[in-house]
Length: 551
Image (cartoon, rainbow, N blue to C red; front, side, top):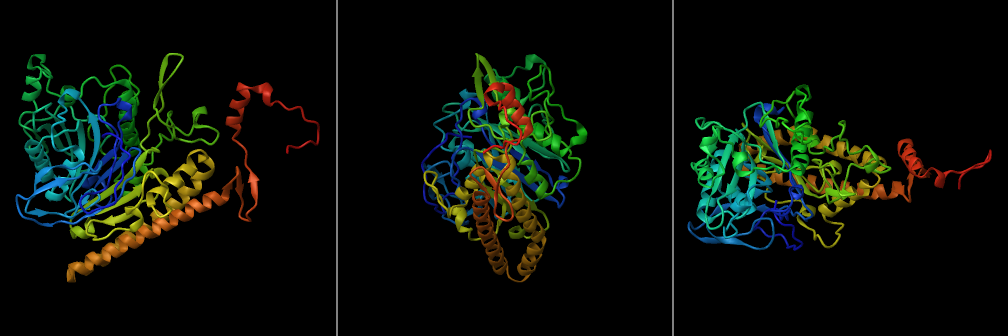
């Protein structure tokens, strides 16, 4: 993702989420975001699903962008979600589609992770960065295949100025993964390849290029720019004399650093090992072992994934593995799975690195989108949205046909706490958990499970009622879904305010209150105390006489 910023602006209808993102061209470990793509046949209910965790220190604001008809050829300035600087001028099209978050009214959804790649292929003179490119595509495309075509056309017409990207793209019928990179200073356009996720399969990407070799004669399942190979040959990124098949990643994202494997491939490994434990995916590749085999582009999960399953994947800290971040002295006395930046560090001239999990404290927001065939678009497309870190935040549903948003999700300033901002309240709850994880997080997760469980149980009831209304009056259906999404979001927000208050009341001054409101000391775990004593046994040794107690 791109450079972090601190500027904020009030919401307007000219942009979607304001997302400030991590810088292009920094060290690989600074790159952020995680995305999972689930094909219809791999989900429990036939949804094509995308997840997207935007991980950076920023303030997202959820915005609704209405579609409409326009004077063809009208020039517009496009503001993506990075900051206030417009990209343009861009020629407007005659018809645009409404967008809620990263899904449009036709259930087309997009996600991304930045892969970086060859720095010499960044063209700073291009008009469109990746977020403006995605924004325009959502306004103009109806299907995933059409989105891929429009992404290519826009980059060729206006130039592309970001680094390498991997896009997740889904509509009610298909799910795709697309990788792209620019052509260098002064050259418009991108070289790219896109793969349809086979039905019944999933894929994942996390700031590391995933596509290597691919067939050139399977247009139903693979698309690519006409010059994806010839451009690599021209730039001497690939030679036919090598006798090796062309690999997109080897050509455009070579020389993967050990830190990038650790931070990026590790997240893909954890998604795969949890989705398909029977396949026994090795940790060798992401741990940087010589000759280790990379993880396949697509896998079949052991069982179809539901929305709750996919949410759970986005809450991972490598629990249950040798890299479980809740274990060890680095987890502190309360088993916290968080390691604050920077990820890499030195001790006595030796390089080290913390694990980089899927769920992370710098997440600005996380989404899980559903696109569903055989349902009215306004009902079938839903974005499950939460500000901040998914592990200790609560998702709320936003249907793609809605015409208004829950107010707490549209306000906030990164520079000032706001008790009426969903982002700030979610961050308050998260930060109250981080340093006292084993004490506080169980209470938060219990509240999370109750609220999300109720929402998921209500989902089919709400959708059945909405579809019936749509059969009689489409406008009434949209009003119903809008009222539901707005009231539910506001209810989730108020509930989370209550969670913050309950943490402060229950976990006060190092005590934990019981049901009668009496505080009691709970101390530290025996395992952590043994480590403390092993380091400084004499300092804490206390010769106590029989009958003495502490004070």
